Length: 314
Picture 1 (cartoon, rainbow, N blue to C red):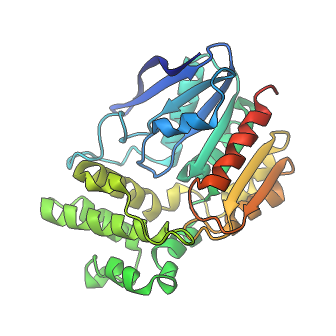
Picture 2: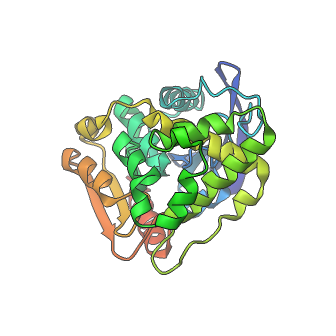
């Protein structure tokens, strides 16, 4: 068993993309895969803390155009047209097959919950269990909430976010408006848009009692541009998913044990999304953590760790 990767590589997935992956833990252990958030965050090493690596064979991968995958969305000339939910699902399945894994536990959070659900509904026979927290479905309604209606909670901060796009775009799809700015040929326009996008990101993930805490990753101009480009790209197109499809097709997950964990005060991922999925997924257990917000605060992290431990010997 090792916390450091005992295997890693770059998977050629087509369209000029190479997806970074690594495997750590017990080579004979129960397979699991981490589906990181963002999109664009990359698979940080902190994900390993949820697993007993004496029992799990853990796969981490960086989704297209982020982390150690190439090309990098932090490069101004990179085209994102071959980066959609459907491309990422295909990448996950190709990786599973290359690693010779029959079924794996899927752990995802935030955007990773959307992608994890979409993957599992497309390939239920490849999934043994699912653990999701800060659950999103990336519907148009959710995107409208987080890019516009959240202004009712943070009016001053949202006004600055809205005013970061040209006046003609302020009543339309704000994510697409930002995406256009983030691909502008002028580096100053791109950087200003990335800063504005990430400032709003810091705001809407603010948790109860903690206030608005800047994410230190946004101090890196390259990460800032990569992250803002990928999130606005996905949100602007509502992840290329038919509205409400993940909740409607959650019955495809029948027979797969699932744990959904959400904070009551998660402004970015309101409880409703997880609740709707749970209504159609008979084997899902929904836990709502009072006084918790977005992300893995102590109470949420403990529940995630416990759920994964429960499944270890299954």
